Length: 407
Image (cartoon, rainbow, N blue to C red; front, side, top):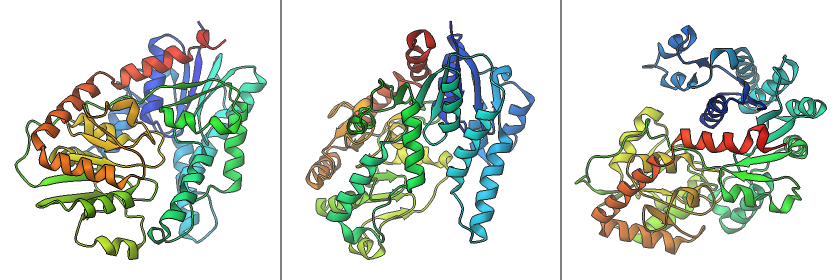
């Protein structure tokens, strides 16, 4: 059986699961990533030491990948972040930490020695040089696209700027030309594409793609987010987690909340507010805002909520949606992300048309009037989560992308 080289700059959960599943099937060549350590090693022990202060470091302990196949380029990740931060602090023009990290990681992987492999699995923004080398070697090139194609994102921004110019303080957020050219070059080199949702796949329909696209939803993090034991007796609570922005549909949620006019209820927004202050002033006093919460504190937020609202307009896959479902809290979302891959409408959550204030109002009012039934839907959401863990997701990816299935 052939083998796959996996490359990701910062040990994301989907990359970790993919590498582990490939190893389980006997077809992992190596896993190149940033700061990481194989479970059971001294390095893993060191990463777990400061977990009270920096619990995110525990996410860098990789399960299922032996130390002999894990290539931790921690120096690349650290250097990229440091150079970008220093340059920005000095007022110099520099790429963001994200861009610096992905670009430098890509160049490092392309330059380092590789074990024998039949395929390379790399991620958008961090695949160009790696794919060029793989193409020279005649290897299969799997491109993971975690977000919708940039042309779809740009179209969304233009439409929302036209509809809600008062909600944004600047014009549509468009990728710079150099970054779009890089993405185009990576896609042109790919021999197959991996996405997490049908919405992301549909964003490729208009770009003349000639290679196959595989849809594999992300796994639910059921061990990190535990279900609520019972329905709370406090105020009816709707929660929204993540960047509170145009792209996430926060402006539609605020308008729907005001229109719903629920009594003795609260709307809680967790995450940075990226809407114009003058626009937010229209809803002053109608919502609570928490700028930031550590990930370890989110479980209690999800458990305390009756409903999580995620009315996204353009997402690859909304992880907050999965986190809420793991906690036994139903989600109302749109089809512009991973909603259809996780939710059966009316059974364990709701799928509403994007940009529909009326549909959001209807769900808000129903959930407030039927809290016990909404709680039962949340329990069904947890059961749905338990049927598709990261192990199953990684296994599906490995089955699709082991070289025997691609050549």
